[in-house]
Length: 166
Image: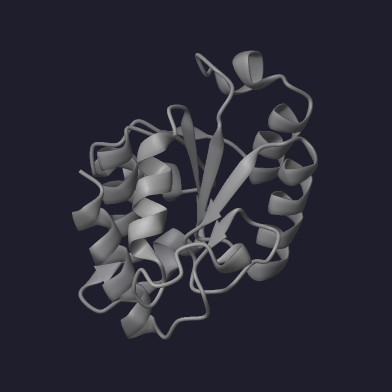
């Protein structure tokens, strides 16, 4: 995690991340296509994304068929290209473009590749929007990011996060 946030809170600072997410009132979760493709043992990444979005009460913007899988899991999601989401947030058009009641105070991302994550987090950071990356790669530009994790560690971390948030 950036700047040592969460230090001493366990291997990936879950307690600090949980505290951070609980403190945020307007959360937007972006779910990428990798949510449909990545399997973490007996579940897919989409299962963890849905559980975390649900417990956080986050608004969800999803790309491609990810929106269909989220809806099958009972999550209200808006289908959008990731670049659209970033554009609307960068230019303070979140109300008209994303149909949100308020400007997000944090954007949670899961299911994207490293290059996209770095570009998204850097663009939002310039606008003062905080970001959380829940993929198993460290993104220095993010406010919070998981460290590099094996598939098994990533699964354990996402399970711990979804259990700790309510």
